[in-house]
Image 1 (cartoon, helix red, strand yellow):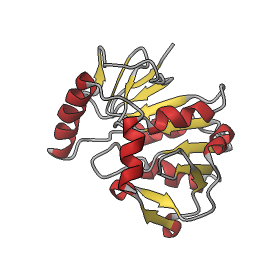
Image 2 (cartoon, rainbow, N blue to C red):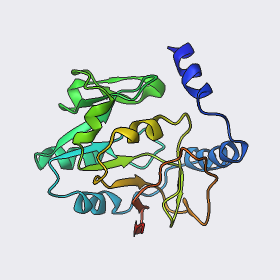
Image 3 (cartoon, rainbow, N blue to C red):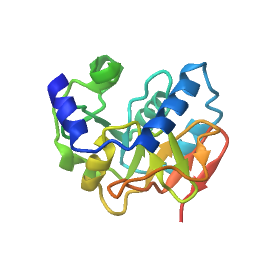
Image 4 (cartoon, one colour):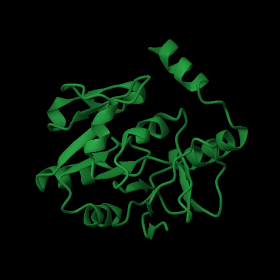
Length: 194
């Protein structure tokens, strides 16, 4: 698996400016818990009424996505979670008891793999990030997994990123393949990108 991940990263050239900003934000996140505020409630309001929502499975130092996953599941929404590998893949969330740790300890479903094209079913997509701008440029966690995955999304599906306060920046370094987001939610702010 390590060889596959190295090959996937090699396909997306390194960007020193991105790498430096990633290290700075990750160090801040690792330094201690940051408040989530009412971000989950606001995220839930934005995607309310959607039948299928794709959500990332957060790690402890990331903005929490598990409360959102639980609330969506309780509302009867079908949830696509990423299946991490060299190429994007998805599976249905079928409850916490049907999850297993994958790369970096990220939880993923044990169920049937649906392939990259399954993302086209999502009517709303929440993705991770380390920073974003008011214009929708997003700094991802590295490797380009979500940039490749979003090629399979429906054109009408809004894409949102969940961040901590202080991660909405005036600019972030970008590359031509970086996909903009439509919504940025910090712990205290909701920003629709035009």
